[in-house]
Length: 228
Image (tube, rainbow, N blue to C red; front, side, top):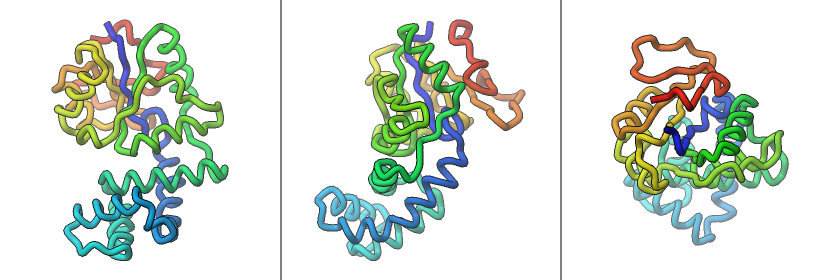
């Protein structure tokens, strides 16, 4: 019996193109000025130090900016980068530069599952701040009240089984009663290794007949009462 659902964002609840064509370029363009303007802020100062430490480079604002831009271009899932991107996107959302994209099928089913008493959570490589901003600023209004919690890479990598064990412990339900939704096979493999129930969102891709995961074109195709 499914008691909690943990969902990915990119390619699952939300369009990959929104993240890749809207959010990432926005952060890439605004990051240098944002960092230079805020470098004396204690939070930014720590993130810049974490960046230099992670990259093994001399502590310096311009060095950190160059490294962060390189990570953006390489689509790296590195915690200080994700935290900075979240802060930059926060300004963009607040200024109305864009709205968070969430598929209607995801909205409808998340609301239905919430009504059924299912606890809902998000686990994404984007920072918790970035996750909350996306769901707060959608065309359908603020969706954050649907969720009981948010997880990012601070709990561990999304392709590591131990991350899902930690999530299950934090949620307080046995892993066998938690459903994980994603469009990435390696993430689903890790969750399944931790005894989660899994569903692969295929969206515009062809189903993989050899996959050891239930597959669904969209959220409408997910029946949580028949999953094992």
